[in-house]
Amino acid sequence: MKNDPKELLDRAKQSNRVSLAKLLSITERGGEKALQLTKLAFYQQKDSYLVGITGAPGAGKSTLANGLITEVRKRALEVAVLAVDPSSPFSGGAILGDRVRMQGHSSDSGVYIRSMATRGHLGGLALAVPDAARVLSAVGFPYVLLETVGVGQVEVEIVESADTTIVVVTPGWGDSVQANKAGLMEIADIFVINKADRDGVRDTRRDIETMLEMSDKNSWIPPVIESVASKGDGVDEVFEAVCSHRNYLQESGQGLKIKEIRLVNELKKIVEAQIDMRIDQVLSDPKFHLQQQKLMQGEIDPYTLATELVGLLFQN
Amino acid sequence: MKNDPKELLDRAKQSNRVSLAKLLSITERGGEKALQLTKLAFYQQKDSYLVGITGAPGAGKSTLANGLITEVRKRALEVAVLAVDPSSPFSGGAILGDRVRMQGHSSDSGVYIRSMATRGHLGGLALAVPDAARVLSAVGFPYVLLETVGVGQVEVEIVESADTTIVVVTPGWGDSVQANKAGLMEIADIFVINKADRDGVRDTRRDIETMLEMSDKNSWIPPVIESVASKGDGVDEVFEAVCSHRNYLQESGQGLKIKEIRLVNELKKIVEAQIDMRIDQVLSDPKFHLQQQKLMQGEIDPYTLATELVGLLFQN
Image 1 (cartoon, rainbow over the protein chains, first blue to last red):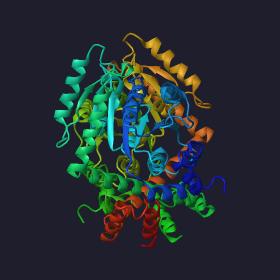
Image 2: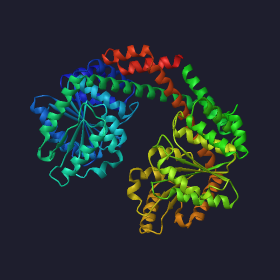
Image 3: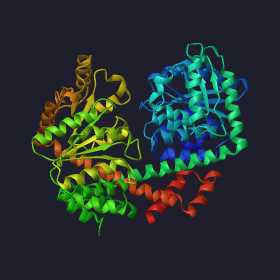
Image 4: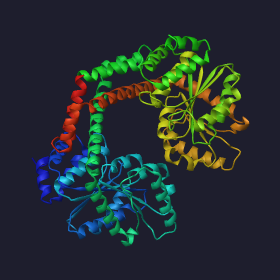
């Protein structure tokens, strides 16, 4: 079969980028074929390292990603970038622009850049992204960069599947991420103050360090690195910090613990998504519409009806 | 029995406020007793009207609520206020202060003010609040005011159970609610520009009206009312708008449609909460720990395991 996941995966492993693009489209679309692919990829995963990059729009995430690509390529390793935009049902807008900006690497066959949006995947991007990362791992990329557009709740959730998470801020970052500062403090393994040639770097650093002191991070203390990614300044230091964090995860055993928590969370999300689907089926059943009328007329209360519904679900 | 929901409910109907307070504590705590109470209250509901008041902290929601209490009391009707703080596991902080501010009505036995926090109720405040509103309805309050502390996602979700939702803003509101402006536009049945003796009222009004023109509200166009609630100015107009909206809901048939959507949403939340509980039970089962190890070792993929888990859930 032409678009059979197994064959596509085999071809993608032989550096066939067209096949890889088709695979990731299958993952985006979701459904039976995506499931088949995910399972194949899961058992063929290689030792791939997932680096998440998040931060407010305009902080310079793509420019930093660009610099990190260069660092990985210096070591003659292949790298893939997944650029994720939860706000858009289609790839486009900001992220498309960012893709173009990363095109300095477009002639380099060791670099694969792909933007990703949610289309039909069960559970949305929170489940589609780890699936896509597994495809890239099975294909053999030793490094995968995961970039989000903003710092919303969904984006933080997505970046949680990364091994190392870089939070990119700029001097005077306070306002731009106010709504989710605590969430960012929690997920950051590395802080980068980008555009560090601007005023306010010292205040920003003090701000971050004060918050880090108050938080309960114990064994790994996130470094705060200054960079001017557009000039390439500080990017090597960021990459070194990624390597240090990777070593820390391995030596402390934290890496395994985190992997376990992450897998169990993913499992829960899959179970919830599967059950939600069944709930929707039961709710759209004509038998249920009768009960719904009784609910409206006050003849049955929602808790009793819920118990009935759960009973119906568990019968099938 | 001393704290039997049925007896407490009977006493609360005879204006026994201590019994009412006990009932609402039962609802907050959740569990079997709360369930029993909810069912009792559901079948004894009276024609009670739920008015939601939301807006950024400091917009003057409590002061407005205070004014609305006065309006209801002018009509010799009883009124209850539920002040809800999703950010706090206990009643306290801002809301406690607000309660004190409402104490102008403390000697009036026709007014009942209660702050509410989530304690143990299955599904949290999103389910506890409609339950509490039903208790107040069964007890016989023709008006219930529902006040939230802020404008976060949870608070918007809570206020969705109201019949009429008032969104309180102040001149120059833009910044304080930036993160959730669209959400507020969607839920508002009435806009109040409070503290309208300050600069910027015209800009704020234009801002709201422009957004309303862009939105797809068709049959009911939310009025924009200016008030200085601290001086009592404009509060009567707000109350009249509540009455107009109530008439509109009744005459257009929208009220019934909204009630249906709301009940079905509540039902879905109850079903999800019940199933989440079962998922947690299965996940903590020793049999599952074996499977979890296989997951970690890459011997079973999360999708296959999820299907197994769902199978387990549906057996019980």
